[in-house]
Length: 206
Image 1 (cartoon, one colour):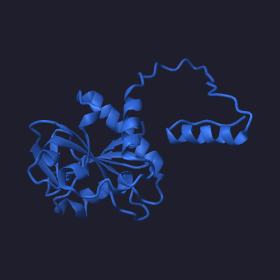
Image 2: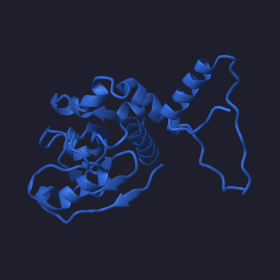
Image 3: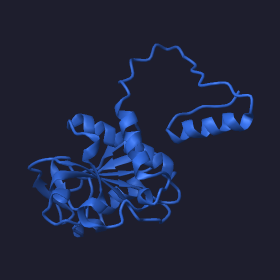
Image 4: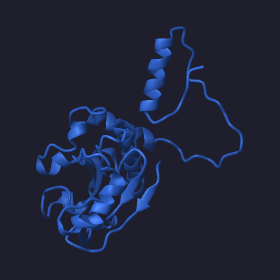
């Protein structure tokens, strides 16, 4: 998983300081901010700056290279649009960045890995991963809801696949090459390579 950079903001209108009294799941959002540079780092800086005066916040923002955390995980964030309901008060909020200079597929893959990590840490299951839409009816996460870069079900499948991976053992200093398959038609090999990269793996055709 990519770096998670803690950038916890001071208590303000954005950061409630209210301790959660329970946890029912994780809520997924798309930022809806299509400005160049509107990645995870700048979303954290926004909450620490002008955004601190607005009652809008999230625990994590995720792009293709970085995850930032701005609200402690044991505190309420204002993200679900349901006032004092379970969305705001009892879920962890993850914003997936949609800025054009971030690769959306990689950002979603990073978010899926983060969700898998949180499910394990808090003993939650895949049925406790919610869309923002579940709490308030808003069309969010708008990209995933319309199949960009893939469907909501594909996102949940990625979460499950990352959750099934065992922790990596300490490296031995050796490199081990894994061959997926051999293809007589180059187009078939390229199609498989595209699927692997879409799932977050690297590879090449030899």
